[in-house]
Structure formats: structure tokens, C-alpha cells
Amino acid sequence: MSEKIKHSGIVESVDPDCMKVRILQTSACAGCKAASFCNAAEKKVKVIDIFDKQSIEGHKPGDNVTVTASGSTGRKAVMIGFGIPLIVLVAALAITYSLTNSEPLAALVSILALVPYYLIIYIMRGHLRKDFSFAVEK
Image (cartoon, rainbow, N blue to C red):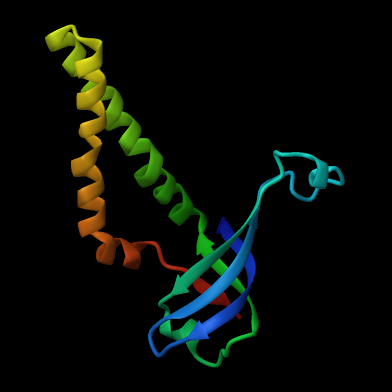
């Protein structure tokens, strides 16, 4: 079963090694008839960078395309963006509180424990860019 994440978009710019595609990201209820009256309906314009050279070839700005990514890529992104930081935060909170019995200190240490994590993510962004790649469906 090959589940894919798909979004329709418009090519904004094409360089030899990067193509930028503008997509409209909508929440699940954005298609509802009452969406214009509801604050829960959310639409955001995102620009996706595509580094797959085969996907870039033959496209020009203004083309309508479908951007795809594998479902496992989405799950991995959620883990790195939300799952691991939550584990780090809770672990630092529990350890610090059990050692110091001070809630304010435990809260501060748990938040500061995320700084090295996000620094590592920032330093590894080139490697992560290869892991979290998008392609254009033909």
C-alpha cells in the first residue's frame, strides 16, 4: 500500500536545482458550506521547495502541478517536529522536578532542554532536506 500525500499547486519559480511550488493548505473542514462563517476553517498558502531534478525538468512558472510526498515522510516529520520534543520536554521536567522538587526550575530546565534539540535539527537541515523530499507527479 503506497499512501501518498498530494497537493495541487502552481509553480512560482524554476532554478536548475530547485523549483518553488505554491500550494493552498486547507484544514479538513475548509470545504464545508459554513466554512466562511467558522473560525475553525483554516487556509494557508505555503511554498514548497522541490529539489528532485527529474521533477524540475520541463516545468515553467505558472504551470499547474501536483506535489507528492510519501506517507512515511509525513509521519517522520511529525515525530521530529512534535513527538521527540514532547518526550525531551516531559523527561527533562520529570527528572529535574524529582531532583530539585522545584516546579519553576523544572519548567525552566525542560524548556531550555529543547534548545540543543532544535540546534541539532538546524545543523542537520541539509541532511533532513534529502530525507523530506517532495516530487511532482507526472
